[in-house]
Length: 185
Image (tube, rainbow, N blue to C red; front, side, top):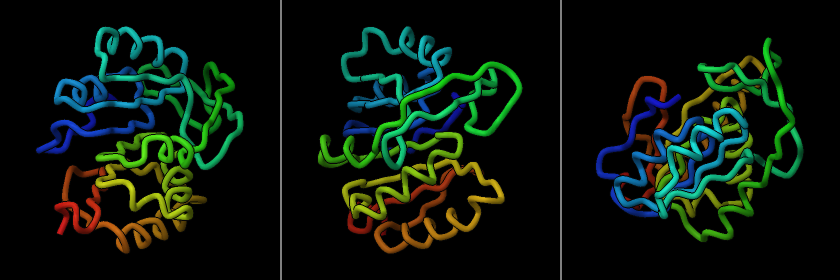
């Protein structure tokens, strides 16, 4: 949602946001001088974010989802509560999912990855751990959306992240890791 915290000390740098929703967090990061690459696949939220981020040359918004590969997925719009990959009442739409590994390889390095991807954070992080590109991410901020079928995967990701990153406190539902040697120790 749009009340996601912005880490203290975030000034400048390259930021990827997966699950930009209506663009409020991306706007806050852009105001701090960050170069923001925001991804929001839900057409209703994307339209609002596009207006909110207009006129910010350091904020780039894409109408696709980040994931562990390329495919089309069904996204369900929960209106003011965001969207979900799980079946839900209300409108749904097919959305393009693009490979986070390609995005990261194009950018080379990322200072902060902000993940509020309604469950997609698991696929995103698994892909980056599997490719070793998680080492190219100085800090990762993730809001987990656990489900019975993803609980073991989330636990495995937390263990994998501890190999390259240090977990730091942030807010109640957020995980926050800084790469070892990048101010996180």
